Image (cartoon, rainbow, N blue to C red; front, side, top):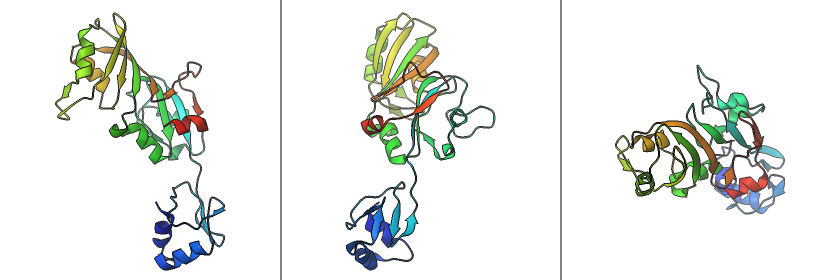
Length: 230
């Protein structure tokens, strides 16, 4: 939101006196005097007028988690442990998932309290690549490659999936790259060939790759460089 709009929406101010406050240097954002009302602010910004705190601001949090099987990709669940239960963080209840994984699926999960950042990961228009390692019950044939690249029709959503890239690794294993995240998408794609998925593991999301030294059930904060990659 623009700073002048934020100030003008408060009950104690209006557009005119907001402009005067800005021009006189009485508004601070994150400790710095800001005179330009067009400056963009976020929910993490600390905003003050004459030392009075209008928005306290808060820390932006970003975590990489190695999700184990049997843990739900949710913030609450009646029967299963959730991914939030794996985090030893005081502000974990304010986090949300940037892309979910099924109960039995393992691998990379990203958690944050930054909605703008997570939308760049999950929204289809950004076409962020998500890479999965897949093991199946039946052999995976060459015909899978062309079929997945062409797209599959999902009747429930009445849509055709975006082109996906399949790399064969063995007779029953492959690496699949998707650019969207439909419900049970990987299992449904292999289900087209009546080939059940036995193991599914997400290796990466865009430029962020799950580290081999991060054990299942463990997590770490993202670095500032990793955050900027998204």
